[in-house]
Amino acid sequence: MLNKESYSRFYTYFKQRHGLREYRRGWLKGDCPYCGKEDKFGVNVSRDRVNCFVCGGHGSLMNSLLTLENLDTYADGMKYLGSLTSIEEFNTPAPQIGKQEVREIVETILPKGYTLLNQGNSEATKIFRRYVKKRGFDIDKVSSKGWGYTSGNEDYMGYLIIPYFKDNKIVYYNARLVFGDGPRYRNPDMTENNNVGKSMLYYNADALNLYDSIFITEGAINAETMGDRAISSGGKYLSHHQINDIIKSDVERVTLLLDPDALKQSIEVALRLVQIKSVRVVILPHIINKGEIKYLDCNDLGREKVMDIVRETPYMSYSDIIKLKNDYDKKQRQRILS
Image (tube, rainbow, N blue to C red; front, top):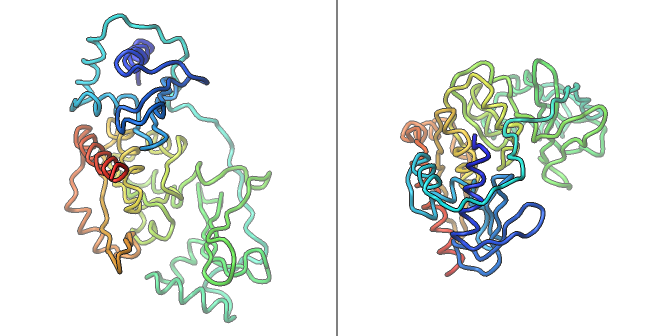
């Protein structure tokens, strides 16, 4: 964690080296040193955020320093900061990284008419079962984990219900459209009977307490594909709550298996974990069909093929991840400027 002096040195670096000015709400603003666009670059020292409104986010203060000054390691970055003179004091308190709201999670009430997937014989039930089998799952096994559907509930007609358990109680659920009309996902609203959102939870969260090595996927279907050691973040981004849950756990090794179009987010997560856990970013393949790119996720590929790729991917050092980030940023800048 950075101390106040380090934040002051970052503050000085971005103001003096890149000519940023005070803007508002704790932001410094100026021309982007990445893509060159005028007045589109922002740095928030207290939030440890660096962003350009044209070429996108650039991770933490340290990530940006290493990239912009062509440095390799965290130690190199700290040495560079130590060489700065005429330091301007940064008075805004540094963020309490790792501090989060403590909230008792109540058991979630599943939608009215909820029925386990291995129960019932209606035509709708058969559609759900065909869908789940096509995805490669055993009906009884996923039913034992609470997968189901609703009967007689118009709001959830056509939705596969996938509960999230924590400490043997249902704390959330994901509803995925299988047939009919409606949004692709219909997740529960936060109410007195459901007091958390998906950003505070994982699918199969108990794996954090059971295994020293885990996989992280985006969706529950991909996590289920990868087995009992896989958890799902519910999206491309991992929240502070989710990352803190990993940091505080006894997990030693983390394999990131987010969808291929979430490489930027995978890199950001890896940079936050690498000094505490062994971590690797696995890049899954894509195919091009009639000029269209189709990204393949864990369920598309199947567990065996994914594991072949995992075994070929080594755990990464901080420098390895920075190099991956630099390569990604370079490709993005070339795409924007082309």
